Image (cartoon, rainbow, N blue to C red):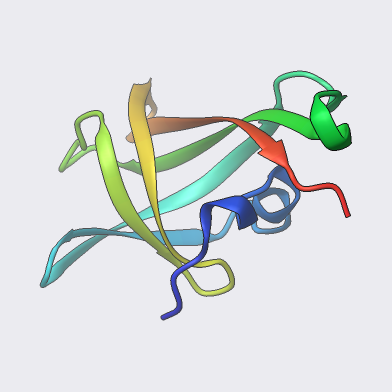
Length: 112
């Protein structure tokens, strides 16, 4: 599986893969499946800065099984379409039989 550069982890890309599974690498032999259930813009994209840079701010939320509950940390995630990348996630609560995890993005987006 190919590594995905951080600049390709955009709101648009995550929005395209809502409700699909991601594999979290727990160790060399074990993975845990999380489902991407939400991608939300935290504010409209902003233009500004030198060279007309564009800033984007968004949140993504995953649901996973109650056991094991992952502590706040950086994890290696794998997705069939998005490839492999590291992501810092925080558990944000329990809903029904799932644990929800959130990742926040505040980033500069390259403007073509």
